[in-house]
Amino acid sequence: MPPSFSTLCNRVCGVLQPDRVNRLMMGVRSLAGSTSAMPELTSVRYNVKRGPYNQVTGNHVDYFKNLLGNNRITTDPQECDSYNVDWIKMVR
Image (cartoon, rainbow, N blue to C red; front, side, top):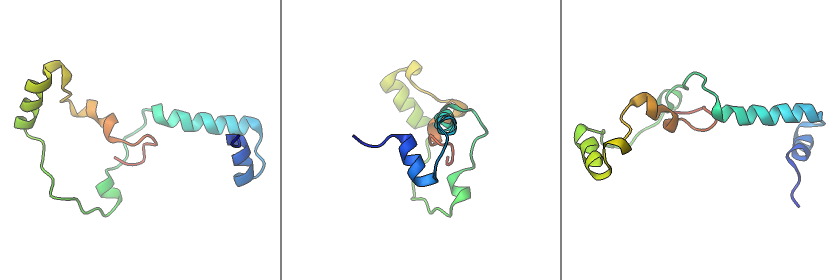
């Protein structure tokens, strides 16, 4: 049986009290659901060279509206933000 999370923490970080391990685990879990400020764009944080990708146009949106129906398309940029941020909320 693999070692528990607290056992691994004790090996890596030294001896931790059980309540501290629980707080650490809850903190990690809460990061995924928190609504803190949006992280900066990856292109700002890192020197990234992007490929020559296309931009989404109205024609693309219309195509998917016809294919899937109006109520199956998300076009509000703020509604899409949560899908463009990693679970730790470090990169966007």
